[in-house]
Length: 267
Image (cartoon, rainbow, N blue to C red; front, side, top):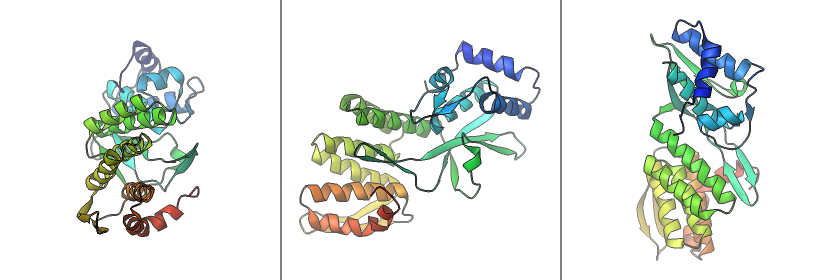
């Protein structure tokens, strides 16, 4: 349970929220207790954690912090939701792998059309970024996909597969989980399954294959909005086709992703 609340967390809240009579006051005190108090000292790192683990370790990434804040807020009867944020492309390098990071934060509904955004790094938050509230199932898909990547980078293919599968079970429309599954299959030499996963990532991401005849190299694509996720799926599919000698298919896809690749300073 990524939102488990432990007795220690309850004691922390009771000690810091005591006397707050309404949701707004409880929210302010909770924010200060986690982000503004010298006693808690939450530190950023790249590991994804549950709410409980984040509280115990005092460490985590944006999803870890969001898990912690939402778990505590809901316990305090504050209406808090996960929210995806379209930040500028954020790439990092892990060994020989390029990692593309997405961002989530917290949407707090205080009623009477009063909304507050809570973000681990409020200094970099920009109201111009597009954002959308997501259900808990999508948030769990984010979580298990992240855990799967951590296992994959550590060489643990079995647990990587199990976590990617869990992410897809939580939300089969979550394209990043399909992309990660495709990368894992490709690393394991399961080429047919890798291709299926990349194509499914494009399908659920809104990019549909209109016509795909592998033997003639004809691939038609249609998308109402070319997202970064779609382009990452295309890039992986292009690399895959290149590796198996399907150069015409790879060339068609590479035309679509060339500009996107230039935004990755590691490319």
